[in-house]
Length: 137
Image (cartoon, rainbow, N blue to C red; front, side):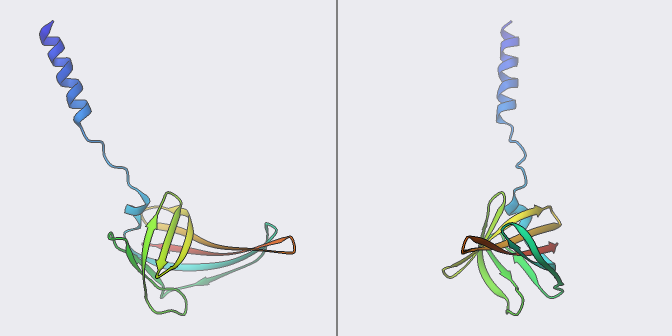
């Protein structure tokens, strides 16, 4: 009986002490160089899509490093060094005191869809402009 109790204690201790595999987080998935395949500009009025325009962006990229910095390239800009943080469904770039927050709609090891939204209300009408970035690693 004593051996059985010792065996159960040993088995329990071994199970509790084993490390679980760390689930891959958005932060881990982001690390690396991403190519911007396309950028889609969408405008909404009171939630109704009014216009959609998609453009190919062969020379744009976002390069995330594991130290919380990245180099990004937006249309008409030189390479821009930013700080970045990510949660389950957001990505935030900080440049000096300016912050850009993106909604992460899709993030797999090789594909990302990040959306930047700008909302304005005038005379009771809600206007939303979205910029959808489709990227691949």
